[in-house]
Amino acid sequence: MRWFAGLGVIAAVVLAVGGQPLAAPSGAPEIKTLSMGFGVDPVFAPHIMAIEKGWFREAGFDRVETKTFTAGALAGEALAAGQIQLWTPGNLPPISMRHNGLPIVILGTNTLAYIDRLVVRADANVQRPADLYNIRIGLLEGSVASAVLDRIAEYYRLDVRRFQVVNLPPPEQLTSLINNNIQAFIVWNPWPYLAQQRANVKILHTGTVSHFADDAGRKVQTSHTRSIFVTSEDFIRRAPHAARAMMRVLLRAQAYVSDPKNRDEVVTTISRFLQQPVEQNRALWGDYSFDPRFDKKYWEDMKVYTDFLAKTGRIRNPVDPLEYTYTAYVEEFNPALVTLKGRWKP
Image (cartoon, rainbow, N blue to C red; front, side):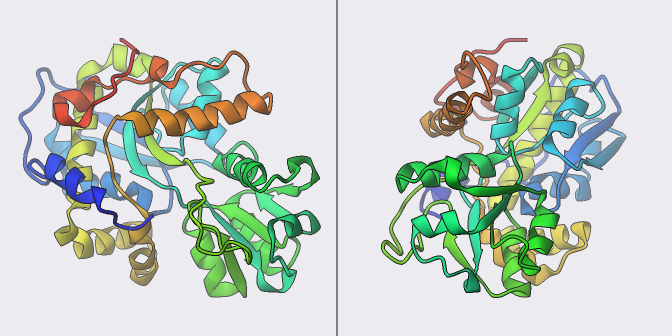
């Protein structure tokens, strides 16, 4: 996705408070150190800007820790164990974990990210969807990439059981693709960008647009990935002032990074923080829409991945996403952002 027309609406709704100090919620945060699970891509721009500008400190937190994890499951477990207070994954792992007994709650959308790309070596001779049967495809099992591959199979009437899937984390996917141990992968930023810099590859699907030979340019949505703010039930109940303050800071930072006039500053800041080339994040920036709204599209994206997990036997007794969605903090921040309310209560 690129900067789309709806961004103007989002900006109009949110930017009135973007970058400006907010009235403090009643009660100081119950904790003084805030720990967040972290990654290495522009998804974390709101978190980084809030840290760099001192907005968490302004909200009452003395210290902010960022922790990286080798797998989403480990981050979810750390959240449930109280080792971190905020997790910002793609939306499929939290759905799975909630159905498997982890008491986690969705507080908001960080960014829409329908950008899980199918990247294929140019010499693999993949022209049509059925050619995918003939190659090895790397992806991280249990991540949103699994659902994207299933959606590709469903749309093009392929048998997902015939795919030669190799379970690899993204860094190993890139190495294996370069070495021709796999011939394709499905993954999120920055790995497709890095593959294009280091190997002769083609993007055969962007998550919303096909580039197969027979339907190149056709809009085909295979990704329903959104980066979401997730916390634990215990954190909200034990430290409601801290949870509220955390979300108000993140929403303020979302508004700031959504403002086009701040783009150069934001890209430069996150590149320095992540120790990445500015040109890399400048190239990736247009893929993200920092859209905080709780609306029908939120429910639809969550439902698609819930249905995938149920269909593949990964979960039983599917639960409506609104049952573990808490919209109160976003609604307090700006009521116009919530047109579909969550049903979870502290």
